[in-house]
Length: 341
Image (cartoon, rainbow, N blue to C red; front, side, top):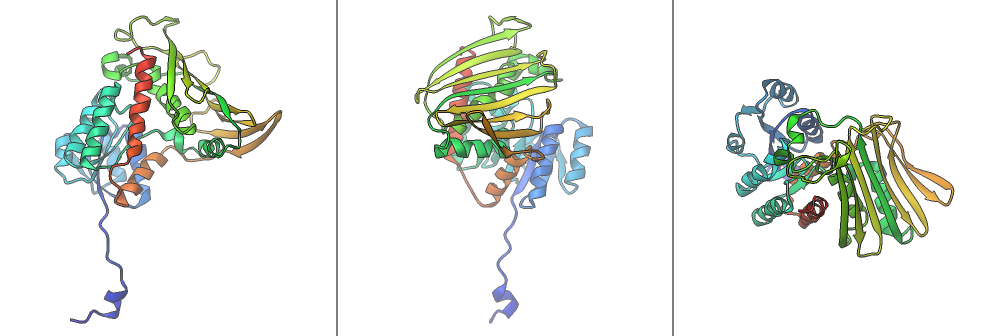
């Protein structure tokens, strides 16, 4: 039978990936909104033990089924799952999804130890499924500009980096303070972003040495298995000869809500991302030449959901396993060394 002109000129309709959400507290719902707004996926299932959180999430995806568990969510025939549950659950839940052939976007940390992270990455590789973690600060406009400067050689040879994340409040959920459930304190919560940003910006050089000092309640932390740290400082010595200094904390007497910055210093200039007036969300990025400065990026910049949206678009484009996921293991090994594991 001869096709009509309309049929011959119309491209075939591609089905959108089916997505499930495991955990829809504030962060899970925020990432859901970012993913829904891409328009490239279909949210078909939601699982969370809180009826209130589930009801709020249903406003964003009214057609989604409300299910009781990850198993039930996977039984809905999803192509990808977004995981925003307590940290101790991330690795096993990611493994469960990947072993059933489902792509994963997970909140950090992907695992409590490098061994857990390595197992998840291996499962993604074996299943040829897209795996990503919500390392959202990579997606700020300012850090993108700074990374481009560093990698282009515009700053010369970068020999020092200083990254800071002080949260004057700290987490409001009890499990964050239990080493068995959180894997650590402010380093696992905030320092993971700093280590990742330093290595990502510098194109993941080999880390030759790691030294660190952890504190809890103002005194040195002697047993990370018994108590989590609320202040930490670490130094990474890189094979390039550069050094990266990392500092993070909870409930520091900081004089504002938060102090967040990432600075890179080279032989031909410097660049720095810093939060504005203690904000958790607004950042300015600047380039330095001697005593002169040039603005690279200013707020507003709605960056928070970009990592999730990027994963959704890549999934919709048919991407499978990305070898860049192995960098997650690199970062996890640095965290293990900071903790003396």
